[in-house]
Length: 325
Ligand SMILES: Cc1cc2nc3c(=O)[nH]c(=O)nc-3n(C[C@H](O)[C@H](O)[C@H](O)COP(=O)(O)OP(=O)(O)OC[C@H]3O[C@@H](n4cnc5c(N)ncnc54)[C@H](O)[C@@H]3O)c2cc1C
Ligand code: SF4
Image (cartoon, rainbow, N blue to C red; front, side, top):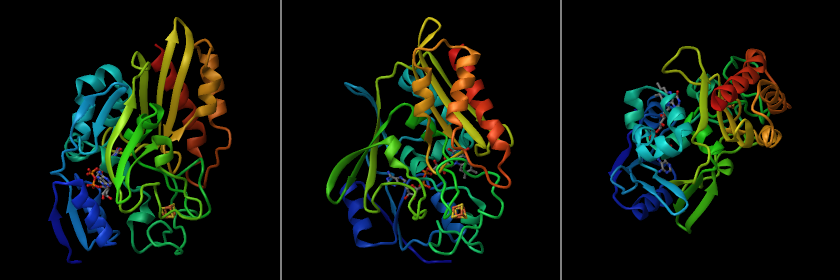
């Protein structure tokens, strides 16, 4: 048992100050990921800074779309009337994750920051460059069934486990963060990073920064959207492969497409080239199959996740079919 201090703050400045003062201070939101990591010995905090009293729970219409506070719970977001009406893709993605109890506790900021579910990362007896930089990667030659197809490095082949993030990146969300140097915005697609030589860094948030909210632009993608998640059992399991698909249609023609995959990369994997291909095409099986082929270019599998090479294009095809219907 590692002793740690616990503080509660109701001001963003107080939370940021704690992070600045103590390198091993961690923010506590719903606690559904962080507490597990502490119990497993993966994270050893000096201090937990409980941010649940911060006024960051709002979900509000803005002049350009919707603003979701970082402390809004996953359930509050998924069930919110404005989300259901304008961003059903986000609601579907969140509801595909975890369990109702977890979604009642989990927050938007916490979901974005959740760590990978790679077995070796969770097991301090195994080498893992993400947990202990320089120790090696236990998954590269080990159990890698859940691991990446895209953007991996020889240092880390883990995937980002979030469902919510896949919809957020497809919907062009923007993250508002605050730190000791002030406020800044990060495009959702730039928030998470690829492992490269530094897999210990999951994202581009500075250690002393706080996620304040996420903005969604006004969406034209509410009529034709689908989130399809394939997993080992139908609930309470992380994605093997998931696809967020949303189409803006003019009759049977695709005006614009938004596509992203989960369970295949260190970050939610936006499929820009497949989206560009679909623009102006008829919404039919032939277009969707070609888009899926484009999306899979550059995929690389490992010993135990070869099946994803067949699964992923099928999930893209099925998600697009359902979205277009
Ligand atoms: C059994 C189980 C099954 C699950 N299945 C799924 C699933 O299928 N799909 C899925 O997407 N997720 C799944 N999850 C993960 C779950 O969604 C996350 O645990 C949850 O979203 C984390 O949110 P939280 O508020 O509890 O975060 P916490 O555990 O409180 O925090 C997580 C991290 O985020 C940081 N953090 C929190 N808020 C902020 C902020 N505002 N600014 C900066 N940093 C912050 C914390 O410091 C910490 O590092 C599952 C979890 C469990 C335990
Ligand atoms: S894949 Fe990444 S998280 Fe998993 S063991 Fe390798 S370095 Fe660690």
